[in-house]
Length: 226
Image (cartoon, rainbow, N blue to C red; front, side):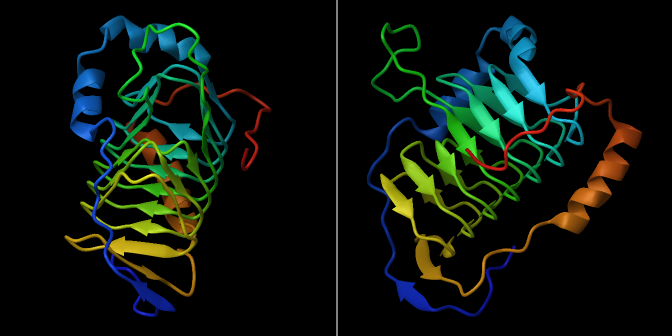
């Protein structure tokens, strides 16, 4: 996805110095997890009516998925260190990884660890192969293919994290920020990305024809945001 040409301001690049738990470590740990964990974790998954979640997706732990959210095959949503609440109208593509993981200095079996809820708003897009560990994501954001967003990042609303960009700093990303290029340059665009309404409508019609879906909770809907 090419970021819009119009911009209100341009900011210097932000070098990524703060590395917490690297995405490669997280992905490797997910791959090596107990295969039975996927099955037992399904009991805590709550999918609102109107969502389309393919059975080939990997969802573990306490996960709530809102109406009109589409989860592609091979997408992974892992609630390891606390619940994950995903709002309405989100698009989670193949091989995208959304994980509420423990910080690097905390072991999963450590005592007195307070669970932290990961909250994802509405109309966000997680493109193919991206990794998101951010505990709070607002609305109308796009995390493009192979991009990485760290656990200590708060993604406000209307932001675009460009393909292959890494954001692992401890900060709140300003609304309508575009992060792009090999040096992760930043600028602020005038408008936030438009919701993928037509694409969601298309996928909600097509995917059930080719994939089995996970069961939804009838009459239940997830709040748009926490």
